[in-house]
Length: 229
Image (cartoon, rainbow, N blue to C red; front, side):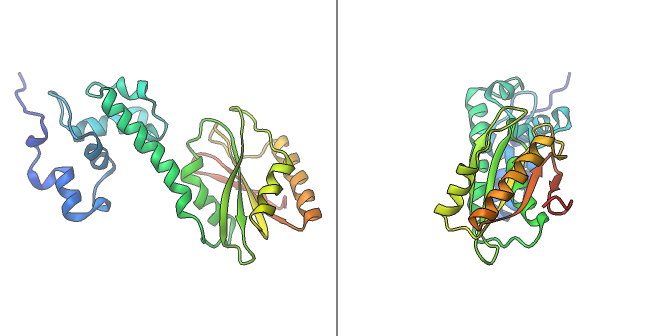
C-alpha cells in the first residue's frame, strides 16, 4: 500500500506555490502552481499541485479548462468542492474583465497588433461576439465596445449600433472584431457581406473601417491582409 502523505506539507517548503510566489513573484510560477495558490488544498490522495495539474491536463486543453470551466465541470474532479469550483469560475471571469482594461492607448500598427489585443479574451467564447476597436487619429485604442452577442453560429449587427459607438467616442476609425466559436477563422459569406455593408456606412460617415479581424482558437483572419478591405 502507498502510504505517501499527499498534503501540501509533503512538498519541500521552498517549492510550495504560495511561498514561491511571495519570494519570487507570480511570474515565477507555472500555471499549475498559480492554480494551486487559488485552491490552497488538495486531497488525501494528491497534493494541491497534482490536483491543479490534473485539471489542466484533462483532454489536453490546459488553461482552456479554466477559462471555459463551469462549477459543475470543476466539481467533477475529485477534490473540488463547491467553494473551490466557485473560486476557479471567479478567477476565470475576473481575467476576462481585466483583459480589456489593459488595451487603452495601445497603438495599432498592423492586423497582428489588433489580433494580439483581442485573442486571449475572445478565443474562448462559446458564443459569437461582435466588438469594435475604436481608434484615435494616431491609431491608438480609445476603447473596445461590445456590439452584439449571437448564437453559436451567427450574430446580429446593425450599422446604427456600430457607428453610434464610434460617434459618441469621437473615433477617427474602427476595427471590426468577432470570434468563431468553432475555432476556425475563415470568413463566411455573411461575414463578408456584413463587412462590405459596414465599410460603405463608414465611408458615408467619414469613419474609416480599417479592418475586420476574425478570431479563431489561436488563429485570426484579417480582411485587410487578404485584400477584402
